[in-house]
Amino acid sequence: MKLRPLGKRAHNIMFHTHTVAGIVISFALFIIFYAGAFALFKDEMYQWENPGARFTVPKTVDYDRVHEAIAKAYPNFKEEGQLTYVFPDRHVPFVQVYGSLKETDSTTGRFHALVNSENLEVIKSEAPLTTVGDTLYHLHFFDQIPGLGIWLSGLVSLFFLFAIVTGVLIHWKNIINKFYAFTTKGKWKRIWTNAHTVLGVIGLPFQVVYAITGALFGLLTLLLAPSALILFDGDSTAIFKSIRPERGITVDPDAALSENRSLNTLLADLEAKYTDFEVKNVVTQNYGREDATATFYIDDGEGIVGDGLFVYRMKTGKIETRIAPNKKSYSQTVYNLLIKLHYATFGGMLMKIVYFILAMITCVIIVSGILIWQKARDTPQYTERQKRFHHRTTKVYLAICLGLFPATALIFLANKLIPMDAVGRAFQVNTIFFLGWSLLLLTGLFWNNFRKLNRNYLGIGGAFSLLILVVNGIVTGDWVWIALSKGLWEVASIDLFWFFTGITAISLVPILSREKVLKKERTKVSTEGLSMKTNGSL
Image (cartoon, rainbow, N blue to C red; front, side):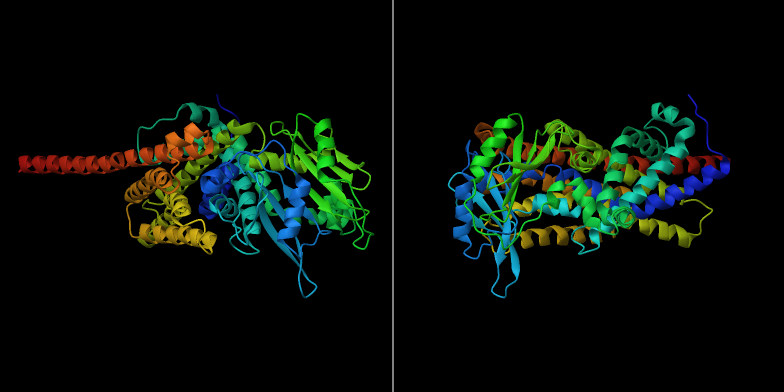
């Protein structure tokens, strides 16, 4: 089946712009998808990261007592400030509390604490005790680059969308034929090109979703600026209020003190009305005063529009504002819909696994694109100086991308090797990760052969991957079989994931080495044959 192709001039323009856009963002895009793939399981990784979180959440949690425990633990706790309680679940069994503190110089500070949902013990943490999931999550939008990171991720996503559109237009003529004609035979350039096209078609809807949502989240302020200027007289907060009406509710900091209804009472009322939904968190404002509000956020965890929010007036117990699940306006639906599509917070675990596989497929597409770019420039039409530049650029890109595999395994190892009570633990774990990644990158620059570079990173990453299961068992005592017997499915799943990843990576090492040997043997046979012919002619 053949579709109508682009004209020759249009095809050439699209081809070159696709190539330039792709190669410019390739390594950054790889980081986004690779780190983002692991960030999908951020909550599931928490119990693996923190052995102290391996307990069962009680059926009911007394949030009024939680509030009292926070007030006792923080004497300068600003009760009337915005206070957020993230409710515990089987992945993160602590109540996560975010609030404000009254400083001595009349300023307001922020705090984050964990409250054990069993015994209501408050764990103060200036920095997170565990950092694997958080680090990879923040890496996927370059948050480690202060101020600019989120903008850069948005721009990369925007260029990615452009590369997708131009790629589809380039292959539009016979995209279906190419899909079914995929083969692993022939020269490597042909194999990489086929893989690039076929895998691109498979992951196309997924990639379009991520390109659009990534650009929107990264460049949201910039994209909303024209709308704020034209529709809301330059007030960007008005846009957010139309999307999230709870932000339009104002409170008076000087309002009189008042006896209000408890959080437990309001929570029970909401749970009775929406029995099939789970309350995720609550945000209070002006707690303990006449106009205090409590905003509850609910979600069914399955449907793509199955979320909602309810704003209670704590004095009267009446709902002032609501966004009921499955009954939302377009403006109320679209933002949360994009969030769900981006973070795969719908469809359960199966959807996360599908997203993870598609993200890894996208990583293969990116690497294949880099190799196609280099191979296409290793031709006589380029000078030796240009070829060396293309070779060095490709080597740097591959070192950044492929070195992230062993570096990711390394941060999992560091999370177990650094004691949980170590001072500055999160900083130490992150230092090992970023320093290890940098050393792996620099080492890869000394491997001039791309096959050797790929083989060595697979070998190192495979070795680190196999160690994760062993180190976790030694440090925590929760070996795979013990974790399974305790019902710690997340702990066992992560160990098994890295075990099979390590086995797969190491099994590919001799295959890559064997191909190199076979190539040498073919060259030797060819040389001997030429020598025999030459001698015979003499």
